[in-house]
Image (tube, rainbow, N blue to C red):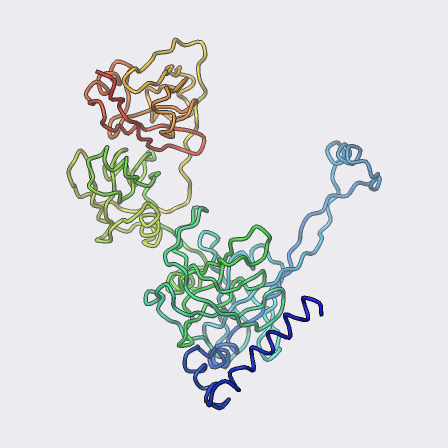
Length: 477
């Protein structure tokens, strides 16, 4: 008997053993299991008719070699570079999901499902198909709203994602790989999950199986209410690997309402770059715990500069909401929109202060450039922290847009601070709340620190400005 057959037979034997080993009949046994595990068939009947399949056609430019493919990559590369390209539109098709918001034909889905679409076709659960109009989409939050010419549709019931808890059962309905009206189940894994994509969305993380084609479909609680829009998965293979992310429905509805009204979304912005507060940074700034958002850059002529926010400030709360981490501040400000007042509680120079700011429209990004090192300049060893530096020339300071009048490039780092995160090539522009104006000033600041204390250096590197904590070696007197 081969192993595979033995396994199948063993499973079959085990599955029927309880019927002979107990006096409980099969129907009673079934009722026990039905009472202890959720039955999702009612949810499917309730919500399935409101879920739609979305087919998208986009045009992708294709470059053709007028001489045909030679089979030689270098030959083909030469002609693609040297000869005028001949463009022709090649149609590409995409699949996604969505769900009905109102009986008169408004449909909610992901922005990435319908972005750059030439045509969008919505297919209902009863197999009817409609051409859809994209009312608006917002790539920053990945939310889009469509309109089809249909009436008497069955809208979903909107739930409250704030009532979700890790461990709650949830289901997804969508069209994975084009397989329409597929239902999958799992549990909420985490809430307010921040992803490393500069998104201000506080994602719901679950282990509900979702795959390409599920995008834009609903995440549903056990009451049959939509609590999120399935948007992303974490995957190394392109398919589901146990982690999926959904946009909270209350967040998405705020975006959808703006899109429906104006066709666009205006997000709020202060004009600052921020970073998380680590335990070491909290200690160096005199904070009792590692909470808040540390300001490491203030954009010129921004809302933050006008309000008096400074580099080195730690923002502890916004409009009464505590800032547990730096991303939560981004979410609060983004959700406020432009030209809204926000009350900020800030930690500065070992005390709390209150600053009122007016948000601006998030129509540009803060970009800090990394200046190159001046090899011809003389180096100086900052013995207090075991770092060798060289000052930047006036021309090397130009990328900083007149926001920095003096800076030092790191040339080498002693062994005592090699694990601090400071790297050769980093540009030192400040210490805690203080900007550097000269080498003598920096050495005077360093002299005020005692051995064993932490010091927060503000540095600029290719991915922007940030604070890095160093220790003053105990051997230094």
